[in-house]
Amino acid sequence: MAKDAVYVTRTRMPEFKTLCEQIQHIIDSGWITNDGECVRQLEKKLSAYLGCPHLLACNNGTTALMLALECAGLRNKKVAVTAYTYVATLSAMLWIGCTPIFIDIDPDTLSMSPYELEQAFSNHPEIAGVVPVNIYGLACDNAAISEICTRHGAKLIYDGAQAFGSSWQGRSLLDFGDYSICSFHATKIFHTVEGGCVIAHSKEALDKLALIRAFGHRGDTHFTLGINSKMSEFHAAVGLNLLPQTDTEIIRRKKLHALYDALLANAPLTRPRLAQGLNWNYAYYPILLTNNSVLQNVITALAKENIHPRRYFFPALTKLPYVHLWCRPCPVAEDVTQRVLCLPLYSELSDQTISKIVTTINEQALG
Ligand SMILES: Cc1ncc(COP(=O)(O)O)c(C=O)c1O
Image (cartoon, rainbow, N blue to C red):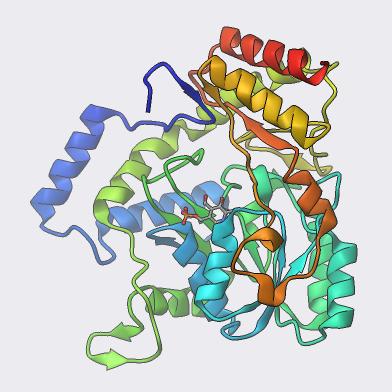
């Protein structure tokens, strides 16, 4: 990784001295994993920050989603999922034997289309669960999706891997559905190097998740099939270190968004429409160019300046080489993945670099 290169994001680093003190404390305690003091402290702080009391820390967002699917009883069931997301959403489903039913997206919001979801229930009344994704930390049409799930008796699990710090109508986006999950990967606005969490809405569900998170047994008594999804004390310490500065990070990113918005105001591109009532975490800056050839030209021109945006998300899940068994076309998602780019966005990004990025985009997009 070249030092002066500009990537789509730059990992937030913990404060060294405080982290050393936290690590010394962990070492002195002699307890480095298995539901330790730092993990419990982090869970408590995250619960308070998000307003979600039934929260469990995990070793990544992918296993967090597996826990939620398993706990919701969706193993080996048909589950509807947006066709436009990072591949991990699908991986978690496939690892617990779900049959995916791909749902196309709304072309304006880029999230699961409630109309397409309703159509899918008509064709597959046995759909037992629905997994919408709060892509880029944006809100789905929560009201419509939740109404459809209730009417069809399907479990609703939000993949909020990117939604930390986003809220809708005053509630964290992670507080919706039967379950939701978040990723605390190093690329995320809040992270624990690797990590994640699963959120439920009752003590019973939380206890079941905790059991499955730790192999499905307590002591010598084995209750159910489990997995290892535990977070270590060292990872939790990084989270405890970074959590207090997360709001400052969001404010800084909001300012950078405003600069991009102003400079790109006349560029021939579109941006996803924000749901009314959304308080966004400004985690990503996605743009939709007019076609794939402009996208390729922009990528090449920026690469010459050592600037590297990312094709988040590419490809559509329906275009993965191992999903042919379940494929049904999702033309909107398939089109969007040909034209979408996430521009660099992180605290230390300078106004000059943003200007350079926008100038390059305008040169290519305007021809
Ligand atoms: C939408 C989405 N779902 C799931 C995941 C998986 O999270 P993790 O990398 O923590 O396993 C990610 C990670 O980037 C993601 O973006």
